[in-house]
Amino acid sequence: MERRFCREKPAAESPRCDIKTVAEGKGFTKKEMAMAVNMDVSMYSSYERGLHEPSYLARGKIISVLKVDANYFLMKD
Image (cartoon, rainbow, N blue to C red; front, top):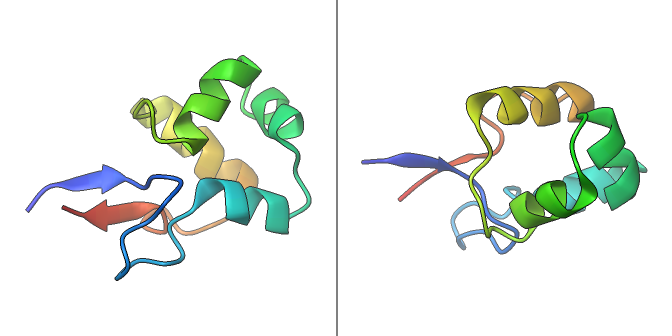
């Protein structure tokens, strides 16, 4: 079973797997998150929308900024 970084619209069995919701819940705008993880807003937005999978480095930065467990955004296929 493969594990992938979550998408904006999570699987029904993993409702917490929503980067945008978590970031907004912690008071971050899309622009603030992009700045905090040192990337272009359009690239960060593509992760939120599930258009691209973030690299391990980008995943680590997002997890660190949002202060969530490393497994929080991983979901099973």
